[in-house]
Image (tube, rainbow, N blue to C red; front, side, top):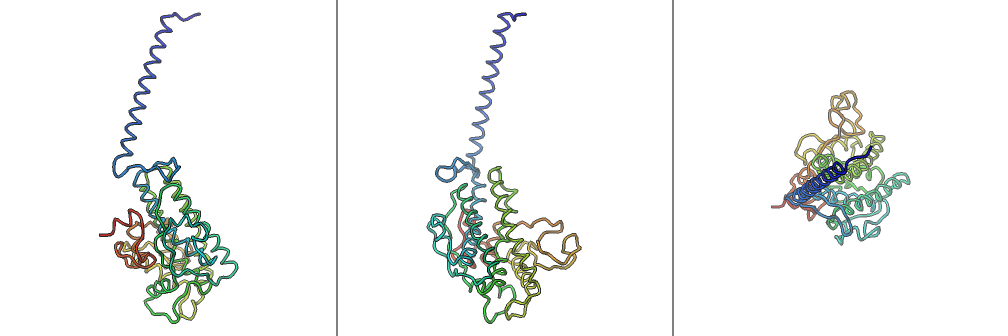
Length: 326
């Protein structure tokens, strides 16, 4: 049975009205979104040249800040494993930043050197991933010298060591020095996660956090196996030294316990049942979080995000780091 012509006309009119309303609503929504992205502090940034990514300014800041730690890890692992840093791997990734201070090839067993080499290139990949998403900034001046690591270990033990601690001297020392770095970065990623606004930024952070956590687990496991071994001629065991380093980071972070060594009191272990602490976590065995303020205080070695030093003689880079400078 056919449909009357008048009925067909009505259907066409209604369909046209629906399309117009949908178009108007969609356009209004698109305009609202544009205005929303443009409002401070959510002003968008269209990624590196050729990139189509658009992120609110707050996400850009939170993704750029970790570049400081990623540069540091790249330089230390690459120099230790290969005897050269980022300049020799991909100078473009340095952004023209100054060469690092004190990097050198470490005296490592073939097994540990293999792991360090993998870590090195993983960190290079992290730099690429971040810089493909946000503009980033040049590599800041980094101090990865034996003297700087020696100061950190002496500060942890509250003692002057003779001979001074040298991270490049052997595999155990290298692993202890490695214990000092990646964990700080991963707690920063945990802290940044709930503050990110976009799926793109959260996905990138999740990928970075997964690998950083794995690196920390490998380092802690290798050290845990050597827990009762003595560190050079210092009369201190590996496990004890990790606890002292963690305590120093807690002190510098100034936000309570967010760091634990390889052995803890049973009450602090998983479910209050273990002294072994190969992976650090809170009372629910969840990763601790840290803010940029805490991280800067730790990597500067001053406990103060506005007083640079330590691994960053001239300070860290990026809008978040700058915000703490008076």
